[in-house]
Image 1 (cartoon, one colour):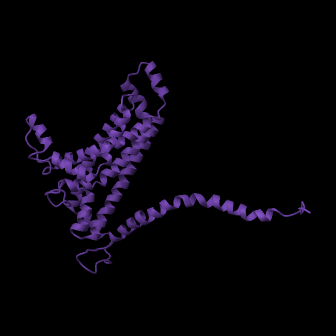
Image 2 (cartoon, rainbow, N blue to C red; image 1 turned 180 degrees about the vertical axis):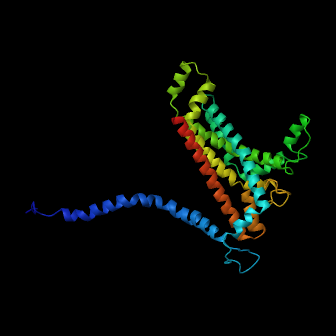
Image 3 (cartoon, rainbow, N blue to C red; image 1 turned 135 degrees about the horizontal axis):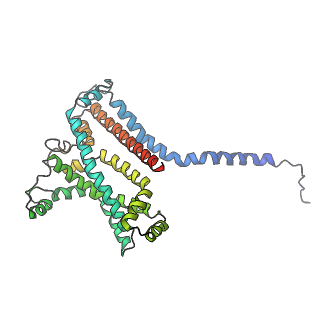
Length: 321
């Protein structure tokens, strides 16, 4: 005889553990999914940054044993204010940053606008503009060092056709800035162009059709439709490019390979903040002072990004009014 189940049989308690576990899983699973990122960030990002901040408060020098825990407080930062090499590195960083970021983003915007049209082989061209970004920074810089060579460089040969004397690109301040900026611009223009292109493709095509019916030229469409719709993307690329410019390291280091690569030229004419921090760490073994330079560079990045965000908010408020 088959067993009969009474209507009063309590089934709810048997299902309660499963329901409770389901609720716990729904609440905790999102945190578990994002936990790997925060763990990696804490180990390789947050901890090194905080430890560098601690080291910047010490007088630690590798060539002087026993100085690992010598607490000096803000003395290293006070020395930065009186250090002419620090201010020179800051000037070089900002100068190279402006010369590389502004043309880079303008070229990327124009290139993206051209790639947004229906042209033959546009997929090939879209892939082609990204190739400079995936190449090795060392290989690219070494090639550009040869191009900007004083005696046998291709750039000086082309300038010589127009009667311009040979330029020692590594010896001068502005000339070295221009050469390094050319390397950075060549590497990152295509990357930013693809970002702009992706944003352009999200602009409704009906806006361009309506503007064309009203008689707007393509330049007017680009200025009145494309640019306003791309403002969030432009702000993103400005911030990211600014951060990259303030952290510039590989290009100036390899550009000055004929001398001490950490000094940025014989007169420190293209020594950036990152290169100066590296020089203090591994060239002079001043760990405490080098950490202070790194933290000063970090604070500078925070200030510059905050200024960009503030300017973007004011522009947005002006447009809304």
